[in-house]
Amino acid sequence: MSVGIAVAADPSVTRGAGGSHTVVNPATGRAIGEVPLADAAETDAAIARANEAFPAWKAVAPGERARLLRAFAAAVDAHIEELAQLEVANSGHTVGNARWEAGNVRDVLNYYSASPERMMGKQIPVPGGVDITFREPLGVVGVIVPWNFPMPIAGWGFGPALAAGNTVVLKPAELTPLTALRIAELAREAGLPESVFIVIPGKGSVVGQRFVDNPTVRKVCFTGSTEVGKQIMAGCARQVKPVTLELGGKNATIVFADTDLDKAAASAPYAVFDNAGQDCCARSRVLVQRSVYDEFLDKFAAAVRGVKVLDPASADAEMGPLISAGHRDSVARYLDGVEIATTGTAPDGADFAGGFWMPPSVVLPRSVTDAVWREEVFGPVVAMMPFEDEAEAIAMANDTEYGLSGSIFTSDVGRALRVARGVQSGNLSVNSHSSVRYWTPFGGYKQSGLGRELGPNATDAFTEEKNVFIATD
Ligand code: TAP
Image 1 (cartoon, rainbow, N blue to C red):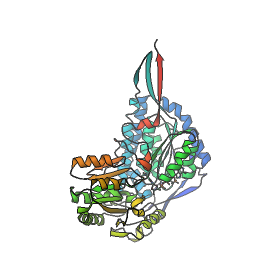
Image 2: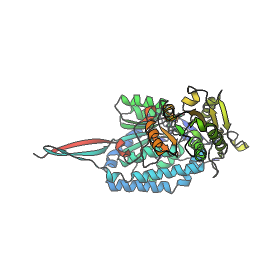
Image 3: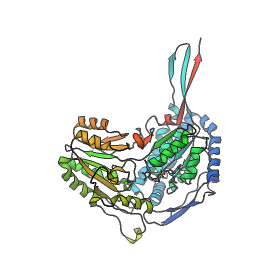
Image 4: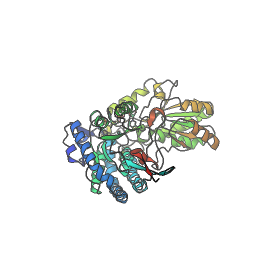
């Protein structure tokens, strides 16, 4: 398969002084194009242009900024299928997921297009005068995106950042630059002024590091591994530069005996194998009340064997390949020496022989100290263990340094609320597996992150709050 390779919206970052990256289709292992990578000097030049564009963007009247964001959303909407096909080819996402992801960029832009006209401050009662607050944009915001959800995670950063009046430099993951490059072109076509939104493909250690070190970048919005997130936070601390961090997860589905077991077992595979498990919200631990453990395992295993792992371009596909050969090898290591309860399927035709495929597996750890129980596998492997009662379920779910998402299955509404309040995670779902909705805040407890994205207050994270007192005496 070959796809049209888009070029960056801003020509001076495409010279490729930082070399180039061969983009590979994960379903086949075949090269589909070459993308030039920026070096540190090109990155600094792009940051300088974004900074020059900032005063004029900040001064755009709120209604006009709203209109431009809606035009940007409309341009994305008109290219949903093109963006989805790029993501299928570049990331191996199922076409159904990829269409949803492109639609999510449109929806996030539309949602935050309402913000510029609602960036309201407060009038605070004080003696001797009038006190008012203003929300003011920060300047240039750097957004660093991982490879697992290239479109939505980019949009959760650039949507509210632009709406708040900032200019944005965005670094896609080296492995998955294609959709971000195309979205930057669509922004220009929709009428966003030049250099308000610049996509800069390049290495994290080069381009991403400049976002941290260059003082003109006033905030870094990072999604990726906890390890790199800690480095970014430490680097930003040197300039007291604010960060939003969306990091890893080791999330639990908790299944109580009083729930509808058929329903819980049928949905649990999709809570972990969606995007081939490469999801910070993947419920890669399943905790099941001991009295129904065997029965649930039978039903769950049957559901896992039914997951349709197919060519991601097929409309029926429910799971595609992993992102790279190296990542597949690191996921496969978690299966060494572990009891495997069941394994699903993966395509084995000649077309897919070079792809990075791995069937989904259910494993039964011996102990809560096993790596597969403790570490973020980020692949199609789910681990299952029994618990006795509510207190033990909460304690086991919280026995991790992560705290991003989780699901609770019970028919007792009091228990659902007690457990939801007891589990230390930013996003919990009862009798479903929802994590990310653009209307609601998203983010992690503990080492899963810092700050919140999305929801009605997301633009606040891209502003400073200014207080002005006017004496009337
Ligand atoms: P990371 O290595 O953390 O990369 C994420 C982003 O940060 C990429 O754009 C990367 O660029 C960039 N980056 C790397 N080193 C950097 C540095 N020193 N300074 C600034 N930016 C830097 O994650 P990954 O490779 O995508 O995935 C590895 C692991 O991260 C996964 O296995 C999983 O544990 C976790 N992860 C979590 C999430 C969420 S949503 N919580 C998402 C993805 C991954 P390059 O890739 O171009 O080097």
